[in-house]
Amino acid sequence: MSEPALISRDALSGHKVALSVSESADLARLGLTEQHCRLVVAEVGRAIMLAGGTVVYGGHLNPGGYTEILIEEAQRFSSGRSVLEITLAESEYRKLTADELVAADRNLGDVGRLTLVSESCMTVPIARALDGSWTQDAGNALIAMREHVARATTARLIVGGRLAGYVGAEPGVIEEARLTIQSGGLLLVAGGYGGAAAAVAQRLYPQYFEGWAPGAYPAHAHDAEVTGALDNLHDAYMSAAPEPDIDEELLRILTISHRPADIARATVRLLSEAAH
Image 1: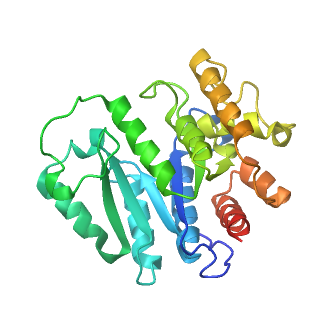
Image 2: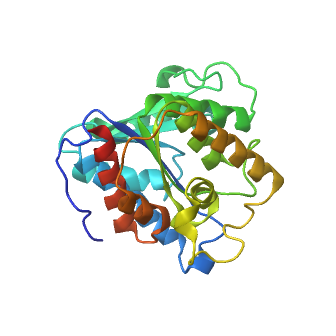
C-alpha cells in the first residue's frame, strides 16, 4: 500500500474528521471490490492521523470490519496520542455484553476512545451502557448517533453507501452528509465508488461526471425516497455558509477517483486548506 503524500504533522491538529465508508451496489461494474473500500479506510485514516487529526468512525465492532482497520492504523501511526474515536449507536452497543464493551475500550488503549450514544442522543458511560431498557428502534438510534458525530466533528468524508435496503427513512450516508452540512462542517465526497456518495456528488458537483460515469449511475439514485433525501441535502447545502476557497483540481480528483491513494491525498490536502 503506498504512502499518501505527507503534509505538516500538525496540519489537522485539533480537527476531528468523520469517516463514512461502506460498500455500494455499483462496485462490480466499476471494476472495484469491497477490498478497495478497505484500502480507502486504511489510507484515508492513516493520512488524517499522520496530519495530526482525529478520525471519528460511527460503526460497529464486528470482527473483520472497518473498525479493526482503523484501530490497526491508529496503533501504527498515533505517535503516542489519541487519534481515533469509535462511536456506537445504542442499536449496536446493546448487542454486546458489559465485558465485551470494557474489552473493546481497553483494546483502544492510548490511541483512541470508545463513545456510546444513546437513542436520546446522550453519551453513556460504558459502566452504565446496558442499564434500563430502550425502544429497540434501530433507525432512531442511528439518527441519534449520526447527529452526535456531526456536532462533534469539523468535517466528514463519505465514500460508497447503500441506496437500497438501508435502515431508517433515508440512506444513512446521505443523512450523515446533510447533518454535517447543517452542523457547519466541511463535507468531502468521493463519488468514484458509487452508491450514496456518488449520488451526493452528482447533485453537488455534476460537472465532474460528464464523459465517464456509466448509465443509470449510481443504481437506485432515482428512487423516490433517495430523490427526496437528495433534495433535502441540496437545500441544506444551498442554505449553508459558503464553502472555503479550495483547490478545484483536488476537488475533482476526490469526486471521481477510484484510487485509494488519490482519495487519501486529496482529502487531507483539502482538509488542510480549509483548516488554514
